[in-house]
Image (tube, rainbow, N blue to C red; front, side, top):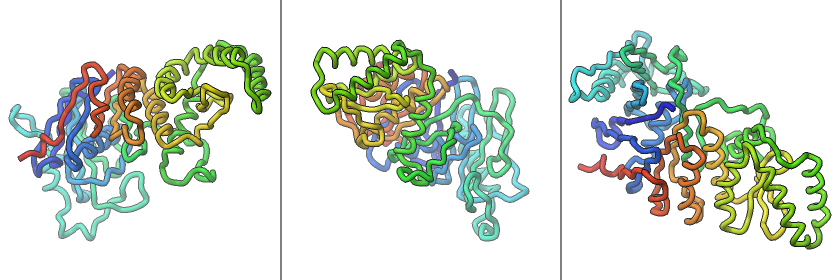
Length: 383
């Protein structure tokens, strides 16, 4: 898989200065006080990767530059300015005449110099890609492909350079942002339980749709599964014999063979802590139940923490073979401390060939994955 080896970020931690973050571990944890730039770092990286994949992440911060170095030699040079450019705009050439030359700073400064001056901005508006409104900010991406440079201005032209086969998934503010295509074949905005905005429930629903479509080889015959459900219904109002209850559990465990098995094994490491179990229902969606009885709790009735956990596990499981960088901003929120300790271990187990860049304030999140790297982002803003 093509991975990120290094990230440079300009004009974020200190004015007009560049910070270098070496990503030489599959799991990198960002720590530091509030306000030092952990969330901004993840947002900048997701914005750059998204732009190269012909998507635009609506990141509110402007006036910064980034360089993302991929292991295959591709370098993504991205600048977001709080200024538009006019029709005569030309992209400056990246200068790498010396190892000591700050190429990103030079590129950023030259782009600002070629943008429309503040005094003329009132007369020029640029339509922001993907949104029905105008903006005075501009995203510009220059892509270095080894000895060949292909440049494009991601303003309105759509570009002609294909992405490097890398995508990112950003979890931030308890919501998920994907830069890969999402199948929204159903008009969820018309359903009462969903709003037009991105919500945790909507994300979980789409992930469950994809999960339910996986090709699963069931070890239990369909007619046997139907009989089991009928038996469960018969004992809805009375206690089921222990031997029968255990037998049903064994049959259902057999059904986990195939595409669902790996995911369910990891998910139940969490739910077993509370004597519960997550399983695949008849419609292919996930449900929860107590081990002491067989009453089913549908996914939409789960708690916020349970929905967050399932979204994290599903997002990683479903994208583990897509060369994905997972950017997780405080994923420990809403999770019990024991779940926090298990989280990165399970995520990395589901996607051992992927990269994880995680910000957190929780000590419970640190020290659970072999070879993980911890970076104090506050170091970059020190005088």
